[in-house]
Length: 179
Image (tube, rainbow, N blue to C red; front, side):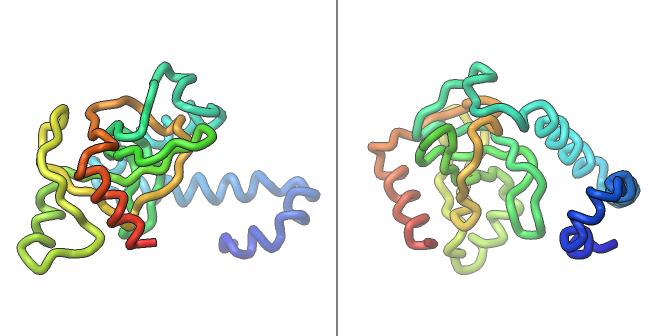
C-alpha cells in the first residue's frame, strides 16, 4: 500500500492486527533504499538512524551531558531529509532555546555546494559566514533550513559565535527576512 492508504486505514489495520504487514513493507523498501545509496550516504543514514533509536525518548541534550547556549555551533543529527533539505549529521548554530527545543540554522563547510552559488549571483538562502574559530573550514549557513529541534539531537558543541556579535545579529536578521 501507499503511505496515504496506510494513513487512511490506520484504525482498521491496527484493530485487525495487520501492523506486521506495514512493518514488512517498510523493511523491504528500506533494504532497497540502502542498496541504492552510495556507501557514504548509507553510512550517514545508518548513524542517524542509530542516533534516533538511542535518543528518541530523551527530553533534551542534558541527558547526554551536553550543555548549550545561544551562539553555540553544534554537531547535530538533523535526521532524514527530503530532497533539498539538510539531513543527517551537520553543524548547526543555535539561535534560540525554548522549553528544551533549539532553533538552529544548519551550517555547511562543503565548498563545492556553496561555491556554486558564490561563483554566480549570491543566493538569498545561503550566507557565507567565513572561518569560525573551532571549525576547520570556511562555512555557510542555510537560512531556509532553520528549524526548531529537540535538543537531544545535539551530539556535541564545537564552536561559538557571540549573540552580541554583528555576525550573529546578521544571521538572525536574514532568517527573519526568510520568514
